[in-house]
Length: 333
Image (spheres, rainbow, N blue to C red):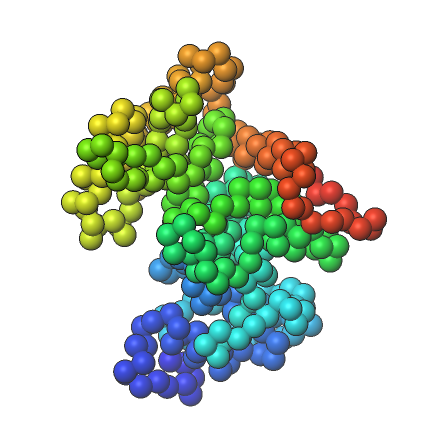
């Protein structure tokens, strides 16, 4: 696996966990695995094959080049307190809250690079961490809640950290019920196009006599639910239940739902059609909806995050108490 590191063939040497166990043997004192690799250890469905592994070392630690077979490693230095780290399967890693914080404040956390771009990846990573332990509509053993994450981001120690405002903005789109990172990316694409935040996992009755229930991934409901525009993502995970999904989609359309199925290949054509349809429905009902260039997506997402925060605070929802020394983080640069 590396210089002086061996494993038995039965341990699945190609698996991420085996590679990380080998990596843990050569980490300098105090260093831990972070980024999407840590998210995968915690059970989040976010890491993609080929992503480099982020190693986070204390700021005063000297790290020599780390080489593990077929495992690209990138090292960053950052403050690590005891609460920021944990052991997962014997591998030192960032704790769930710290993992979500790092993923939501940097666009490419495994490369440790900031980005002035949109919030798509940040929200996708945060929701993937929030959905850990969820079964159906029930959450069991979730590592933290959206309120706990907002309280963590608002800590005074993070005020001047790079990307903290990005993490705070991403927290306004925290939804544990999102089924996959692609659904989070679709959510942010809709917001970045100038649309309101859609309803998630919208339930409708389908089938003869409405005896069955179906949930729509992302849905805009008009006229008290009489007109529905829904967007669903069809990923590779659905291949094993293709026939069931096709039947469900037909039953949904039979209810008059304007349903758009987005895949990785049809996204460039289907998503713009869905966005145009929603804008048409809004304009028919007197709403003023502008057409925006894609380069405005980041600004629209942050403006929406600001509005969501005002709504949440006005409603008196649970939000982190701020001490006098703490400041209210702006979402825009």
